Length: 173
Image (cartoon, rainbow, N blue to C red; front, side, top):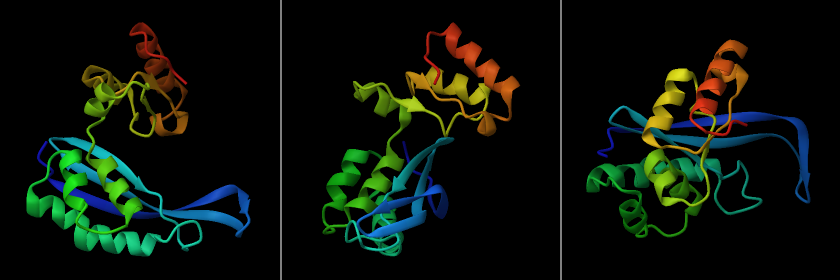
């Protein structure tokens, strides 16, 4: 799985209802999505660092810096293809566990991850149509599908995906 490119996106997700902790109320969440592209497949990872260093010492800004200037270049400089190799090589950099985890997650091929896990992997964000559903099932990428009606384009496509999954014994949530 030769990594062709890696992209990062900084996203802000507004909460439907505020989230309250001992640190105060939050009305949205900022986070980084990392995408690793290889052979027509895209792996996704989320860096869970928050905007402010309240829960942990990493922030979205520091994680972006570590990813952009150190971790992503490491992948290409060393020609890293396997997540285990990345984890080992990234150990040279201290801390920054959230940034490292986000990139490592993106490097995992869904099918490989599913084969190595005992817990059923559920796909939802990558299920965009009946075609992506077929591809995911053919690769053995998951054992459960979560259909998001808005993501697949409406109830007709949702029903087609449901029926395909049902015919192949794959639970739908």
